[in-house]
Image (cartoon, rainbow, N blue to C red; front, side):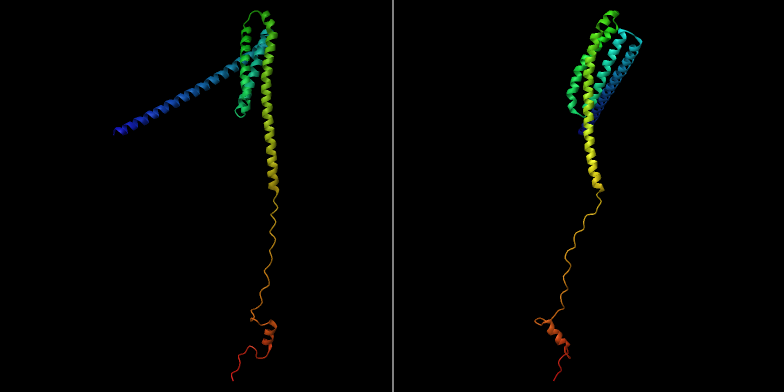
Length: 224
């Protein structure tokens, strides 16, 4: 009885533990989904605001918004392209690592641009525009180079795979069109001539015919 109770308690504890683990995993997954959705929504809101400021604020302020928008668009697009293809092409892992380093520079530059947007001295902003524009150009050029290289690589592999598939299809199509029946085997030698009728041994055929042609041949001898 005590053993049965212990087994039941052990099963109950195992079920409770599994339920707790499943609940924790579900909560973490939901939390990651919410965080990802929040980051995406915040990014969309910021980019929408940058687009609005680029056209609504003339002069250095509008230029800062334009630089931030170009920087974010280039790096984000490259990240999506590389991370999406790295799952099927491990050779892109080094490119992903380089993009991580480039993203750190982009975030640092974006923070400087965001601070300058609040700078009341327009002359100071105008004095730094040239430097900031050059840094933005270098970062976006590097990000675009990585993205274009990944796109060229994917297109090259797709072309090679398509060419190989075309060759296989041509071979299969040729095999399917080869519907001529296989050649029939040549007939073997026919049966030989039927053996002659049974004849008495040691009697030539001519002699036997002469005997059968004489009158009374083949009749039993008359008794004396």
